[in-house]
Amino acid sequence: MAESPEPTRGNPGSTAELLRRRDAILGGVARATERISQASHWRDFMNDVLRIAGEATGVSRVYVFDFRHNERGALCVYQIGEWVAQGVSPQIDNPDLQGIEMVGGGFGRWLEHFERGEPIVGDIADFPPEEQPILEAQQILSLLVQPIYAGPRLWGMVGFDACERPQHWEKVEVDALRIAAVAFGAAVQREEREAMLQAMQRLESLGRMAGGIAHDFNNVLTVASGSVELLLDSLRQRGALASTDLPLVEAIQQALTQGTGLTRRLLQFSRQREDQPQDVDVFDSLRGAMPLIRQLVGRGVQLDLSSAPNVPKVRIDPVQLEQVLLNLVVNARDAMSSGGTLSIRVDSVESTLQNGTADSLPVGRWVKLAFRDTGCGMTSEVRERIFEPFFTTKSADRGTGLGLSTVFAVVNGCGGRIAVSSTLGSGSEFRLYFPALARA
Image (spheres, rainbow, N blue to C red):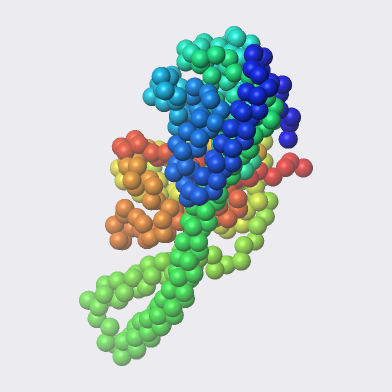
């Protein structure tokens, strides 16, 4: 961990005053950390922790910003919490503080410090000119800002503004407040892990249930299918099969075929098949599946297939990758009942803290597989549920609600990520990210 910077310049006051404030800050950090440990969600403790920190440090304002990537992939900050001392103007509703690009907005220096785990501390008058206007507009004379990490991910930052007079920060105070930021980030990471664990446990339970149902259902289908064949042979041998009976028999056989397909998809979802991962070129797999894809989409849908050059390979079971491709193609086709265009694009993506992606990928290299259709789109309510097993907006004869659940299980099973954007009436885009293999 990098060392804390030197304290800011200014009048530190008497030794007794320094010791009093140091004790207050250490006590405040202890109380804040205790409050963090008691809450189940970071929003439950944030206001209390900001108040405790503000009163202990004697600053004018304490706040929390979180980091997000905008549609261009630029890392931005958004204010989500604030405490202010009496007589200080709140900034929580200031639109100028929402969506500031760190690099484009002149705060690239801050990001460089945060990447090293270092705080930003000092008098505003000593800051670079490009940083001063927005800080001076809030009447800030000096500040201390600590990065908040949720595991390896830069999640946000907590800041302390002095607006009445410049505030001198001792090294021990800076380090103590870093402990509070670390505790905050640990709580965020714990909550995210618990939410992910609960989601995976639900999927695992549904997968086991689906696998059991599929095996039992397959036994019933086997008996029914065999019985129909025997009945047909018997009727033919006796000359008792009337032409009017054929449509009924064909309907039974079609229903059995559909049931067999449902059983296969249930087994795929429940992962009742041992994975056989290989080093796979996604674009080659996509081109290999094109004959089947063209047959699935029909004549009314135009296909646009493209790839960036030199895209690295990924580690995945080729059969499961084909399942992902076909499920997403069928989903796009069904969203374009009146025809349209399905664009499929393969790219290589490098995600860093400074040059991240709009989908907030962890730092690293990824292979991106994007499916964009011009179909009916989705509401936000539907979009939040599309990966739930058995959830579907299609009619009973067109969907089982397992296609996108299978996609989710396969992509997450190989360490990937999925992002979806959609506008009702204007189509949808599914973006799949697979960890890229290092080139030979």
